[in-house]
Structure formats: C-alpha cells, structure tokens
Image 1 (cartoon, rainbow, N blue to C red):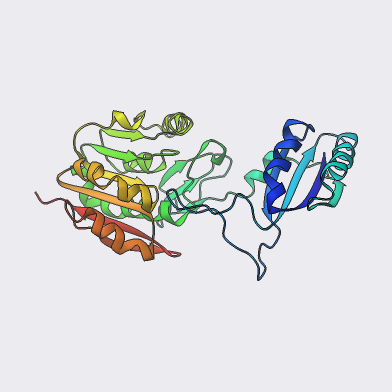
Image 2 (cartoon, one colour; image 1 turned 45 degrees about the vertical axis):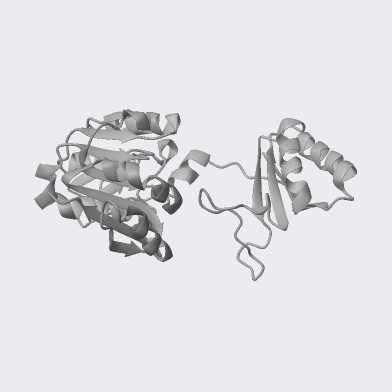
Length: 300
C-alpha cells in the first residue's frame, strides 16, 4: 500500500479528491486541515441547518491510498503536470507498512462504563467483572457506540431512572436511532413496545442487527412507523432538527410520559426550551464536555 499526500489550496481540493478516486485509481482520498492543532485551525463543518461557507479548508491536505507504487507515482506525475500551477504540491509519497487493519481499528474501541454496572462492550472484548448489564456493539456496524457525551448522557439517564420508572415504559420511541443503542438500553432496563426509527436505511439495518445480537426485541423502520403516543421518547440528534421537530416529538409523548433530548450544546439550552414551551417544559438534567441532556414530563 502506498500513500500520496498532497497539499492543496481551497479551490482545487474538491476536484482533486474526485480525480484521484475516479480517474487515477486511488483506493481512497481523505481531506484534512493542514493547519489542524495549530493557531490557524478553523472549523469548517457545522450541524445540519447551519451555513457551510466553504467546501474545504484554506490550506488542505489530501491523503490518497494506492495499491501499488506505480499507480501512486503515476498519479503524482499526472497531478503535478495538470495542477502544479494551481496550488497543488506533493508533500510525501511513501510505502505503508503492512498492518492488521481490523485489529488496529478494534484497538481504538474499549469498553465504555455508563454506570458502575452498565457497560457498552465491543464484541471482541471480555466483559469487565463489574458489568452486570452489557450492550454488545460493533462500531463497524454502528452509528453511535456510547463513546460520545450525548449518547453517554442518554444511557446514564435510562440506567439511573429505570429502577423507578421502567415499569411505566409500556411504549418507547427512539427517534433517530442510529445503531439502536438507546433503544437496546431501554429494552435491557425493562422498557417494552419499543420502536426504533431513522431516516437512514443503513442505520435501521444496524439497529435491527444489534438488537438481535443483544437478544432484545425492537420494531425498526422509517420515521413514519412511529405511531401514537409513547411513555418514553428518546431523541439524540442535534439542536436544529430537534427544534424543527418540536411539535411532532411533543405530540408523541403520552400523559405522564417522558421526553429525553440530546445532541444539544450548552449555549443552545434556551433555544430548545423556547421551541418546546408550547407543549412541554424542558429542563437541563445533565451535562458532559459542553453538551447537555434535556428532559420534560407531560402532566398526567
């Protein structure tokens, strides 16, 4: 395997990465911020609904992988001849040492403690001795592995409230389920009648597979499958879609039911409270690394 690293100015990046894959036989092409971790680092991608002013960083690095040396050298020569005068430069071209990429990827995911006794454990890891309740999850199949603060907070809420609330969770909705980790957690803690929905068919397939692997029953499908009212509604998405969906998500909360929202930054708390105020009184109930968890209960 050979790696070709190119430095490119903003206007050339998108066409360059497409050309590497589509015309020059690169196995992959990744775009990185050349100023990452430095004083000139700038954010580029925002949450859904936020404007994206540029398609690349002002100074980007394009990293392409090739199966053999001849292909990498040929691509480098072609790109220099074609783009050498338009802000494209070769930084490195080198052979990569053979690695067990599966083992390398797996090494980046360790068991995650949600509470002292409730853990998310990748399938290749042994279950920690302290774990009495476990979700087995493969990151390669998942859109959410319990490692992000927004997911951890939702899982903590479920685990801590379940001893006194789970008996009343006769219908549960995980809206934007991703890997299904929240729905699976709710099931393991006693929730019933669980619908896990997502706009991404791949996420629905992952949720269904993960539910089977963990021995729980979920009804997985598109958002249109969500029907009627639920005793527990979970939505770990982002602030903008959560705001837009306020009427719909609120309508799914039954009398006495609970709404749990995550994917929200601390500075967005007032915005979400205002959006849901006509239906439910949201409150911040947890925070983690700049993110917050919000909760509301409908009156009986």
